[in-house]
Length: 284
Image (cartoon, rainbow, N blue to C red; front, side, top):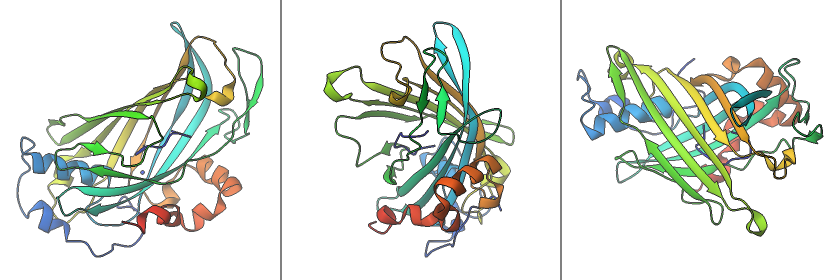
């Protein structure tokens, strides 16, 4: 979520224009039942849930809560809403390039506002949330559902796994698990961020060949080291977050709390969200 470059990470067909891409039916195949034992069917189903077969802007969100975890004790801390903006482009090798950016806010659960400061119950300190977001980044998803990030922080190591989908009746679930380790300045304890996202869509939607993307719900869990700005020092424990949301929504369906906080901090994103990706997208 905030301050971590990733995927990421959200009318249900996304925002923005459709730009010069092959019709979805040409990739999916008309009037054909999906075979999830076939790598191509798994791959295209994942892209249509997570992104899009064309180059439209895909707006997605996760809304949830953060907790501190010390031993077996869980302490509520703050809420979080992260909104990701992605665009996807077919590669010559059959995979997809994607550019992703995120605007996320830590929120006071009582007021729904992003105060920029939080009382840390473990230390009694009031600390400042820097409210920063990393610039957009490029990812590559290969036809074998392997994810690559060409540009990562020096020394960072990522392990990413898109699991075999679970299909029951009209329900399809994909789960992807990411683990990232960032070296600490001065050789201290590395900063670790791990997350699992489970996406859910309907098989009946995925078997409609004219849909470049399909309605998709998401559930999210992460485990992450204390944020440096929390000033936790050597205090034992870590953070955990849970949340849920949707992939592929229009801007008017984003949570009101996120929209208010973004209007205060980054109002230009509300006017032209696609511009967030342009510095990288225009280089593809």
